Image (cartoon, rainbow, N blue to C red):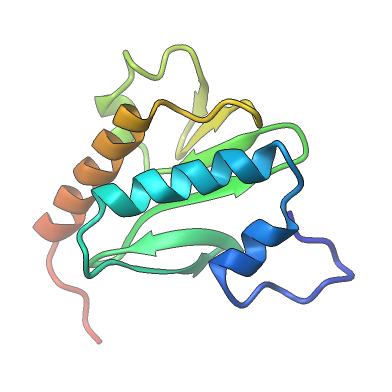
Length: 128
């Protein structure tokens, strides 16, 4: 939740420090679950100004907005794969929206992350 008056955050912790409650607590939980499900050599950074976890490319992004939080599984494949479990949530191409004070279930977040890691690992390696 960046404002034009603040410079872009340099770290994910700095980003999260700027997010007001209750969204901050929700995203902190989500980050913990994402990192627990991602391979140990995964890294964190930013994509489109949002905290992003990387492993052979972007795995997922997450962010807080004015009236909701979102998880971005970098495409629609994971949303389609877990469509039954995602029925209680608003989804569109590439995003899963959920209440600021109620994160997605931990088990679902971990399944999405693991599916995204497998998809990234199956792709041809990117050129450096």
